[in-house]
Length: 342
Image 1: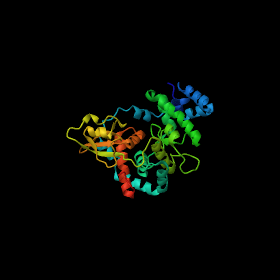
Image 2: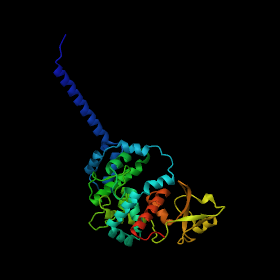
Image 3: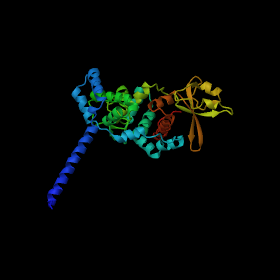
Image 4: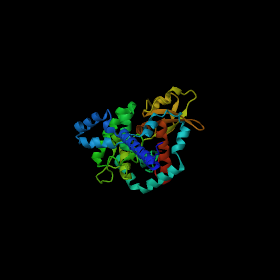
């Protein structure tokens, strides 16, 4: 019987394992390389012909973009049970977030005052949005934006068109603002910075608020303050007007007038005829409003959202989001001695 040299035998299998590992690594690299994806050529052609990008540069970006299965899992996860207003509120109305908001206001008071004067959007609203979105910049997201947008653009068919559009906007944005396309990090959906702007919103609303030549809402809180204010101004914030009002219900109020949509459908006078009356001294009959019934811990709450409330929902399409941001804003304003929305 032929005897095997145990040392050579072990060496052979160690080399075989090494070859297999290299092959596996190559497969992973290929799997992560979007330059060869079926949709990539059309995307590259568009960036070159429409926007004048260098073909090799765009192809290089797609080669470096990595597919993230965790992003696809998050986007495809079945909807969770309906969040009640009571549960939702507790996520954002916390003593720690209020205190952080006070600290942020104290540190950037000059920029907040200037933003309010420039854009006619109250400082308390700006601070609250940054607080709700990223806890004042402490949680801006951990995914590379290029990975998030490429993963969703090329491998999430249901929203492919939207996210390829955002990838297009992202490459334009990094060219305009002189960013490294591989360094910016954000949410799994590609939102960035203190205020979590997606690339199209970044290009449309981000401003260079400190005058250094770059609109950087990712690293620069002063630019973020001005940009959030600009976003609200461009979406129709009415300075000095109320945001929400508690309501007084008549005995036979019209329940069908509640929760008809985020955009105000009725005038305050029409809601009053339906037995839903605003309990706010600044609310006038001709104002547009939406009536809301929110399921709180101790029973339903009834509110009236005015046009400024609708502007908050343009930032995030949720009545609970807008209410949480508004209530947080008022608590922070009270702590710093600023005028609230009375």
